[in-house]
Length: 209
Image (cartoon, rainbow, N blue to C red; front, side, top):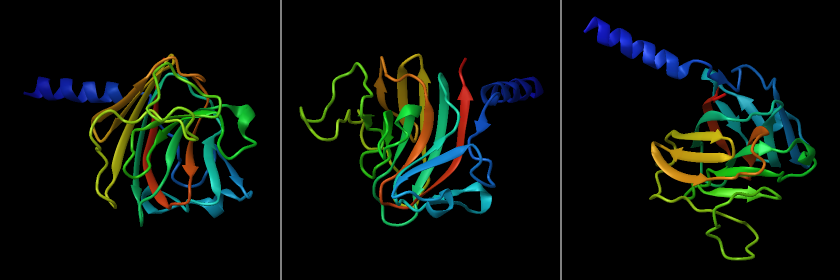
């Protein structure tokens, strides 16, 4: 029994090795804000007790890491702190597009009722066909399984694996989307402000290289 427990502990340690918290729990070092109209980070996000990050949802824009990432597993937990609405995780934000509210990136949708949808924003692309109507203003590849978002107020878990242009998305343990030949395949990671307050916690990234 002791040998089995030791083996299990070693396995868990190996799985978590290399994981880093993208928020330090104190301030927003390592992050930058782009909004219209321009705002300070403290106007749009704040750190709550326990390392929870609260987003005001406004003004429109996004908070992004100052570092670029490629080939990783990203774990994000989010919940609606009031009335549910719209939000998203941005992958592979292109640094040269930080002059706009919606940059070149792949959005993992956290919008209430649409968690797990994928949106190739601006010039971003992937190989799989879209499910939105041809010529629609918002291009979407909808999530493939039944809605797995938890009731409003409860914490949701999203796990994103990005490796060499393939991105897989799981919401609360349910595989919801997968795309290949993603372009760009690397870049910054961010969180959108789309008019609705929400909270984040346990945002960790594990490099896969």
